[in-house]
Length: 142
Image (cartoon, rainbow, N blue to C red; front, side, top):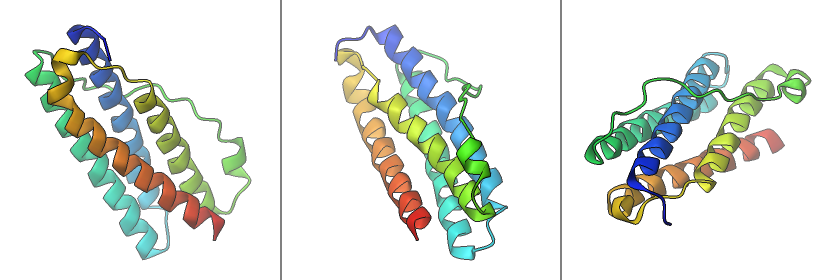
């Protein structure tokens, strides 16, 4: 990890923007799920993404930056999604966004000076995204 601190702020803001999109997708999707257990799990995902936005925003502020307030542009090919039953379409849409989040986290390079301030929040976010992806894949296979 050898990014400049200003690059770290930019990258953290990029992650915040992606979380904002994904939490919006999850929030909208939860209302469309008829199964109460699935709806509750997707609501927990919303809570996770909100928590990550808050944590990453505090990291940006601690590094002297201003947290992003916009949403990222996350184009997703929804062709396969449209061919599934309604619940599967909703879960596939969420999974697509979670997969993009995992990819974005995989590309993050943090400045050594900022690493101690951001490693915990980044680790927690990656763990929750993996948990989300696993749950979604399990639901789609059943």
